[in-house]
Image 1: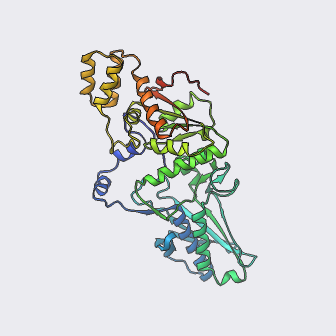
Image 2: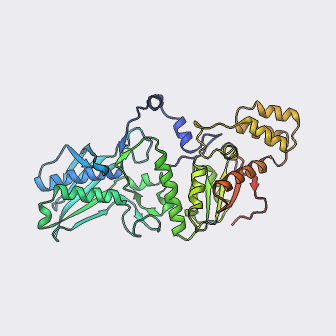
Image 3: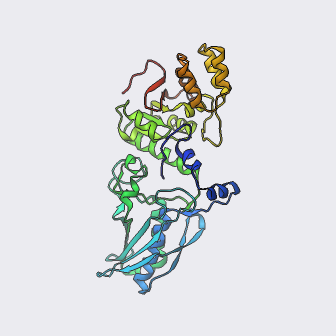
Length: 394
């Protein structure tokens, strides 16, 4: 999955990406007509089936039917088939993510199949462009190809469906590759998670649901699993790529300790609290997202929540701002507009108040099981707010 960068105002992460969708996609979403797609796991399984048909029958297939989890099926097109000089057969299928903005959409997923020597033995591995696992916490052996358990089962099932008779006397070898996988992986969380050299072959249902919050939540859980498996007791939760870059300049933590939580502040803190090994969670972001957290909004998607100017004015009252400034804040357009008013009028401690409210909200959400710290960045990376004030950078 791609994590977007927080570039401007309140439009961070997925919220920002969705704001920039083509008009036809926005219209589809409004009507509930967004097109679903297929996972890399489903696509790899289709390529494998196509290659097996060609290996056994000597004839290429135009389409194949793939068995999905929970008894569903899908029909996918085979892009091309090639027989190698040594008898191996390679097929490719194009990953179609539907209307979901995924980095792997349009990627060529290839499968090379051949006969093995041992009867009933199925050997499935990753080749060029499929990542290798280098860190614990992913549910995969270190050194293995990044092919998740459910796609692995789908691949094994495809082999048994097509090569049932052949397996009685010989084995089947399958190599999944993605020609442009190494470049694609740079746009994903794989390097952070310790998956190097390519993309992962993923999918729990075989189907890609456009703008699925479940996929973002899964990436948060996976990041926390890796961090704890690596022995971390501290994680730094940011609202996006830009805030993460600023946080990295402050904290000397390993890369796996930085988790982009996007709009899912409450969910991320709850997941941290559920992991007894984690003792400390640092939250870092900009004025828009942090104000929403301070208000008690646990899911800060720009389309589903709004900054309350009355709330921001109330914080200014606590900071003893002049009445005219308080009135300007009440009629401000955005949280960033409020921030500009605060700076222009030199209102002291306002940003610390925002951080304190975030701390209170998230601490309650974590049921006081975590040491929580909050940092508020200016858009140039300057730290303008912090709570508690007596915290030290690692």
